[in-house]
Image (cartoon, rainbow, N blue to C red):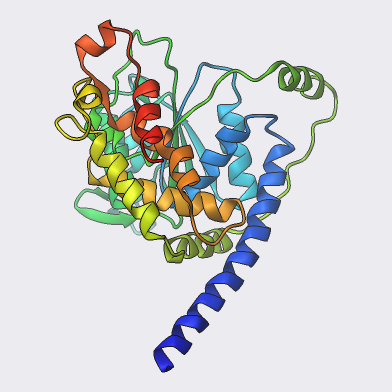
Length: 334
């Protein structure tokens, strides 16, 4: 009886915390909508990524408001936001920071660490694939470990810490594509597409006038971290866990349906399952629900898995796409 009472009390506290978080997140989403027109799926996936405590890779051609989205997220969520434009000559120290020699008033010399732009709660890594592999790996290592080491000294990154990186999928000349192991550090790949006609008309009219809507803060960093902790406490039904496991395992070559697996050269590892588990919980909370459903798994399968899979050369030659492969895998979930 005591055990049941404690379980009921825990469930009540989770529901109460969820109701408060849903109200805050709803205000944040509305505030983002005053600055970023349309792109509901993109906004939702960016918020899911942050609520799940992860990093996102925004892929889209220039001019689709990727930078505006990140700046707006920082303002609305109360995060210290910075932006770095990645270029081939960017060095790791330009991002992480470096030690400099200083002379004190009594002529003593000592090293002082000057923090780089990575010491922000929300970092936009613009055109990350333009930086050298050395600089990319320095950033991605910090993303994974949440600290940097300079001259043997450890420096912890702020909390929360999120990176939203952008890539231009069209122009690849002079770029350094991220290796598979580093792509896996991103919880989700968010494809940013062209707006529909009505949204584009609104963009043209409302962004070329004299007055632009002022974006208001809807949450604090502490409230965001509380929501992130809540996401990890939300219950997940066995059917959803089974669906995530089946989806991830069937997306690997050598497993699942040979007609599908035979088209894949490599597939997602266990980190993909972890990412999808957190993402479906975050999406449920974002939509005002306490527990995720199979619909959440289906909605987030592609952005979580797409950058963790690759087609064989033969499959690409036949015109197969990852979008179609993942759609077939999702359809088999029932």
